[in-house]
Amino acid sequence: MIFNLNSKKRLQQSDEEILDEFRSTGDLKILGDLYTPYMNLVYGVCLKYLRDRDEAMDAVMQIFEKLVIEIPRHDIKNFKSWLHVLTKNYCLMQIRSDKSKKENLEEWINSTEFFMENEAGVHPIDEADENMELRLLRCIEKLKGEQKQCIEHFYFGNMSYEDIAASLAVDEKKVKSSLQNAKRNLKICLELNNEEER
Image (cartoon, rainbow, N blue to C red; front, side, top):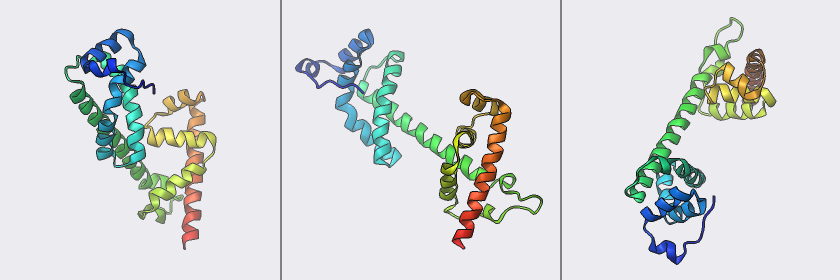
């Protein structure tokens, strides 16, 4: 992120004047001059919604990058109010995205197809305790290479076999195979963890 220390000239300019200057030049230093006085405001809004200091700090950086794209698209009358709404909407989208990932994970955890052991029925792990999510994430971290990438793309990114294949530059059959192997390895990992806890 590029920020200039506010000069006397900048302090004498209105937000609208700095906005016009940024629109005409595309200079990120000028955008930095506009954004810097509002960073505390943006951080405060992000912290309120995201409830995590690190995530709020990351959001402050991401929103600056978003401004580069969004400002030319909008006729902004009051930058402070517009920025507040943009920040709030960004945070809400992040929350929805995180919720979607969590729901996908929970749905996957509770999937009888995933935990089916031959025809013997659902594996006892299917009755997931509150630590299940954490244990599963740890097991995913232990996966190697394409297996880990495929699992993350498929379950957390909601990507199709075709999209994953294109992303990883591999054949769709390889994606299916990697997913099957990853599921098997995750099941083994979870079973081992379960045994250790007994």
